[in-house]
Image (spheres, rainbow, N blue to C red):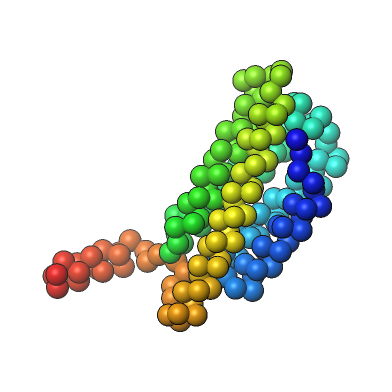
Length: 164
C-alpha cells in the first residue's frame, strides 16, 4: 500500500529544485508549499501516532487545508492553468481527510489513497507546468507570472472590444 518514502522524498526534492531553478514565482510557491507539507507531515507524524491511516488525523487535515489555501491562492492568481490541477487534487486530499470522521472502520486503504495519492498528481502538474514555463521563456522571453488585477483586466477588455 504505502509508497517507498525515500523515493517520494527524492521526487519531491528533485521537482522542487527544478521549480526553483527553472520556474517563476507560481512554480516556486507551489514547490515550497509541497516541500513544507511533506516535511511537516513527516515531523508531525513522528510525534503523533495516528495508526498508519487507521484513525482520523487532525494534523493531516489541518496541513491539507493550509496547503489548499496556498494552492488555491496560486491557482486564482497565476497566469497558468496547471495550478488548477494542483488545487483540485488538494481538494480531493481534504475530502479524503474528512472520510474517517464519517466511516471510522474498514477504510484504511481508501483513507490512504485519498490523502496520499493527490501529491503525485501535484508533482506531475508541477513538473509539466515548470517545463512549460521554461519553454515559453526560451521561446518568447519573460512574461508576467500573475494575471492582471481586475481593473487592469477591465481596461484590456475595453481596448479589445473598441479595436475589434
